[in-house]
Image 1 (spheres, rainbow, N blue to C red):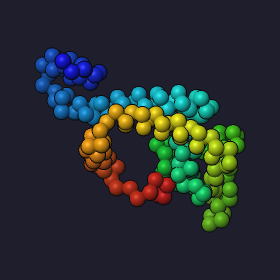
Image 2: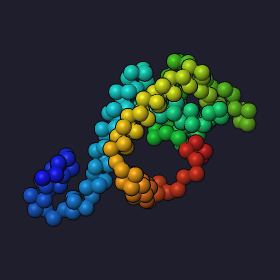
Image 3: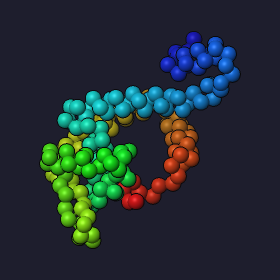
Length: 171
């Protein structure tokens, strides 16, 4: 008998209820949601090792992807999964830790740009290396064709939910 995961048990329990809900047809998405939750908990644990919150990790990673460019708070927000209201206090905390600095926006007298400091770059590079290593460890359990097919299917769902994206940091 093949190994059962949590979602197999959920599907079986719903089927036993006889409600007619098509739970088996959405099992893939239920697994994605569960995996996402588990990976978020792992990210929280990783962030704690680096004295970061997950949102700070996301912001630093976004700045690192854009490096050496600076980003406006709006561009930074676009590159994360955070709400716009959370961005100012998040930048404040990162600035207090000397991981980012605010610069006057040369194109907008009232605007600011956010720059990754050398300490911020060093910290996020270390944290990213640890995160990528863990994700690579998980992906290594899949064959090449499984990765290609899964990526194509998930891309199709993401495009339905978000639409196409040219850049993660340009609004």
